[in-house]
Image 1 (cartoon, rainbow, N blue to C red):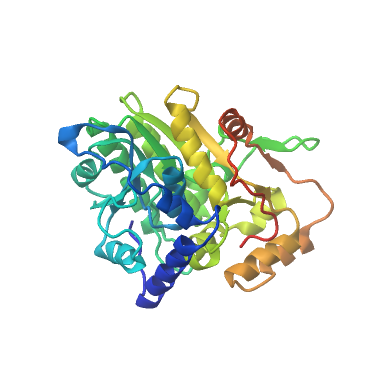
Image 2: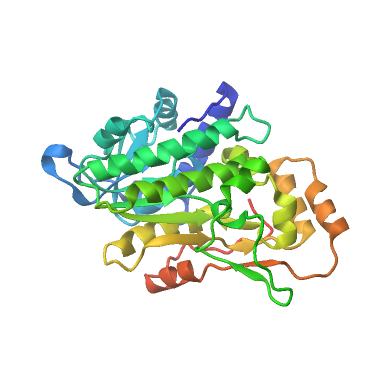
Length: 371
């Protein structure tokens, strides 16, 4: 949604997607996509919603693609809501699906700024996964103040469309850890770190004053989603992942990653720079969705695999993203002493959810080897 791409960038994304789909072995994306061949078609408004028919916005983004893959592995029928002809062309160039529905995936055009367009896309689905995000590669940080405003507007309209669609009862919304960590005045006990969990919200004024546009956009969008869902007949869960990494992230998610890392020096020194492998993020989305059915999931979930604590780890992350190496890490080294981090991230809520469901054989721990 709202993605601006060059022809060269589009081709690089197509190549990366095709490579992911063609990857062999039980852990490969192709196994997941092909396994759902023969799934029943998701009906439209006339047929009502199938319990396992869902719609995914941003389904060809880095996170969205992984969510679609995981949904198909879990036996869902997926409708991809695509905003532009460019996105449709990308799918066509992958040459993996043929006619709509052949592999359990259908496509529909929908404008995320138009609730009626979204309602038509969601109609017949029992749930929605909103994974879309605005990205402007023309901005030096990959994200602008204007994008932050648009993202909040889009979030509100997606939730409004969910509420207005009779078949939709659940929505999983992709937010960010950045919507939790940025505040000007945290209470701080010198003896113990301050815990950052799902109850913490970033301060929009602080983000605005420090030009942390990506954090501002994620915070404002998630708050808009919660406001729109309040008191309505819709179950909403938000997933707040750290910096999303994993195979191919530097090619397919570099712009969002660079935007995420604005303010990385402060996050690194405060113990707040965390990464989440894309497979973990996708599994968290599906686990939360399934647990919403029996009311054992609700609210926000912080999601990460690893907290970057050493400057050398950050150097490696910068290197893999092709950024000028060592700037933030060197600053953290130079300013640092052996003081413990001021903050401690907490993901106990998600850990309880993940452990209460069946264990996923695809879960992998990633530390310094981000890609």
